[in-house]
Image 1 (spheres, rainbow, N blue to C red):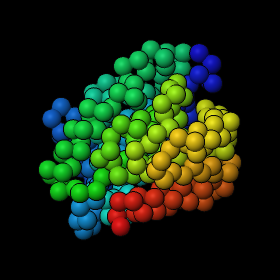
Image 2 (cartoon, rainbow, N blue to C red):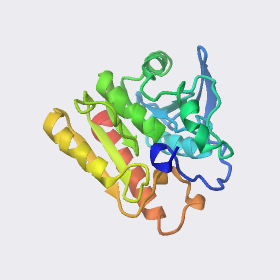
Image 3 (cartoon, rainbow, N blue to C red):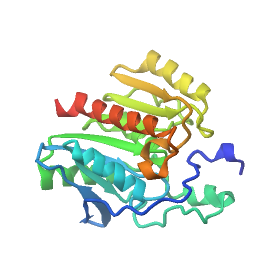
Image 4 (cartoon, one colour):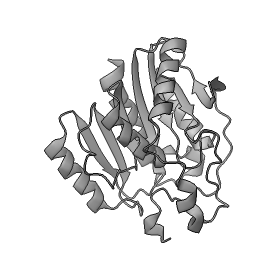
Length: 247
């Protein structure tokens, strides 16, 4: 399998540990990480992890950032107990690993988490954010679930469907200019088709010089030249959620 066939591949390098400010909860058979805001706003965000799973430090870090902006933020284990990808795994085995971890088969988990957020936290406005594998999952559920008031898909494109453009609610797509898994041609095609078929607000933004996975890095794990773009992407993400959920 060539690198071009690996839609979620990126180099995570050495990551410093991050425990997070939230806690682990159980939603029936699903484990999840939850972080609460300082004061209850009745607004919530489902965070969809990448191939490295719900306990990956970078994912918890972004969950805590979103929570600090007023959203109960929950990151469930969308792999349902299956082992996440690790840096020691071999990319030639990735296709087999992915077969039972399909980002377009997350609807039941999303429905379960929506119910949990409403019952446990009285959430009245709920959005969804996802990275890479999770970005594809977000793109998918924004086509299928009208309960999600806004979505942010970070470096995730659904490429194998002609029915991927009629979004149900506002969706923001974030990409890196130097992403070797998603070409600028694919981004341009997405924008062209959304212009033609989409009837809700959407936004596509490409961040100069950035590679796959750039937006969830912790500051100490970034190169200095990349830090402003990661911070900008996270600020843009929060502004999108605020526009369609908070106000």
